[in-house]
Image (cartoon, rainbow, N blue to C red):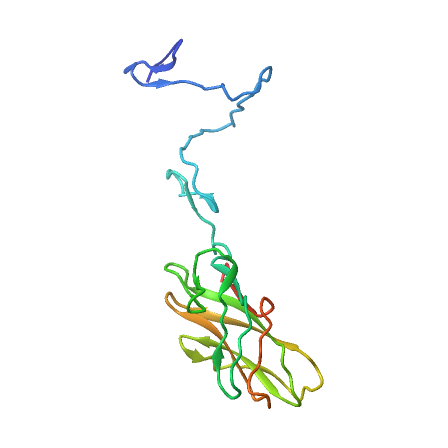
Length: 218
């Protein structure tokens, strides 16, 4: 193959409609930029990829491509919380009305049904932590927070977190941390139950929340 050079750039000697030109308009005025060739054959490839991707080798003789990094990132990720208090009778498992989000990367938490649902393509292991703050405490009650998966209380090692024998306090909080292996369409909710001698327990808004994220690389 022969190459010619003209004012319009480099030309293919066999087909001068094929041209290569260099655009230096982005170089700072008065600055020289240098391209240094390695001591070996070199190929140039096009494409910028997208956010979070890395340039991955395709092997000998195969062009590299931009691909999602192994393990991905920690999304979906969300934090849902209450903007108003909630009352319920003792002995009743009640889903907490987490009606607002601080963030929700994949719009996967529904603030009307108060549940997180695994989006398409986002199955995997998820880490969650939950906090419930009650503003009503009588003498020696027992309180529990219970994570639910697909409409049922978690079992097989995922049990409720509780506190009992509390008295003389105006409020207290419970925290539960758990990890679940979830498939697309699985959903997680947050329930609480108590046997306080008063007829209801009033949650502190904003301080009661459920948050979670997908674990990368597992």
